[in-house]
Image 1 (cartoon, rainbow, N blue to C red):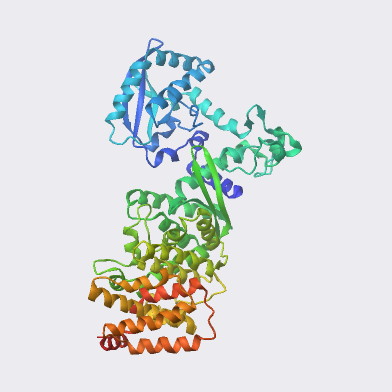
Image 2: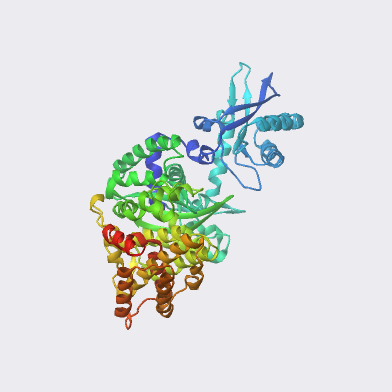
Length: 608
């Protein structure tokens, strides 16, 4: 991973001719949400500084080198005086004013500024507060300082070498200093393979901690100062690593459906040409997404890269969580080829186009007022990310696992990325837990049943289901995709599955008949909370049969099929409780797909 980030950083610096300052800035913390900058202006007058007021400026990323913003400790000042306002009562004394108090001894200019700020602290605090209250957006507001020259020009801290030196020295000292220990020495750099001064805390300083140097048992010779021997990285390569991480943060950082992750390209052949292609696409697409953020998923961007570059590279997926200055790596997938990602995208697109999930069937299953296919309808109820034909499996999967543990959810996602097999029984158990919960609480079960069925088809078609192979759907041409009835036939490959599914269909017909007659469906209280086994199924069938006759209804073809399959399955039941329950709710939900239109019309006529 470090080698891939190093390569990307080096190529990006060369591509955009970035200097050291540009690399060290925390531009990504400003880019997404910062709209306004408040500038405390000091005026130069005969060698002295006078307070001139506070002005508001629109934030422009091109001005980042002027502001020199780089975050520091959450409990202390940032690296430079520029800071993000979180709480005025804390940010002003603890970050802005405190910075100059801490640094006044380092430079006469800093001392002069601090003197002016102390003399005018009350009025500055008042003016900043008034300006802040007038802002329409008060999130991520940047506070900095500017200087009006005798000629009237406004300069910022980035125009002064003293401030730039502080940024460089303070940012890079983290490469080797831990408390009072200096973790550096002379050795061969892990990345460039050159003999020079190397540092031992570079990876830790940019957020990738592979060791804990404050614990002697984890370092060579039990000496913290010898930590550099484990992962020696020189200053130049440290800068490339910082640049690589910032490139990924800017272009290939994702947050959706409870997951935050980086996608790190690793070029297998001709890195420069590969980077030029990915840079050209990403920089153009990033500008496009800026204006279409409400309409376009970032996952679509990744799909576009896959289409563009093919297998000249591989992707590394790093899943993490961060808070304040803590960065925890939750999972890491080492090597994912674009061809596999293309399969993941294509399968989602193909399955979303099946008749099961089109608008016509959604009106039958979810209600006549529904508009759009199942993915479109699912997107309307999702508040946190855009559900598309390229990422719906993440959204659907989260619905079944978020209440249990992120570990399960993340584990399945990383298994999919790694092409590892998934336990079919484990998935069904969690699908049924959610479905039963909805049933108990009086919510509809159609949505979780449809989502779970889409996931089963998806995992099956990627050949990821351990011990279970249902079918293979044609992906070449959407017009050649199997029909609903054909897929159901493949899915129900044993008499016990068919019997349970068809009984679910018949039970749905009964509850619908009751609702039309009574305005309610009391029979649902006899379904054991959807915790069904073989004995309950055998007991349930005559109950449904008899109750239908009370309403002068019969479905001879369907009833005959149930009886025949129950008889064939009598001595060969292989289904678990969750499997039986799942096939039942599937039939209960997808009743319209059991027979083709001609047979269905005929059966409906018989049932009147």
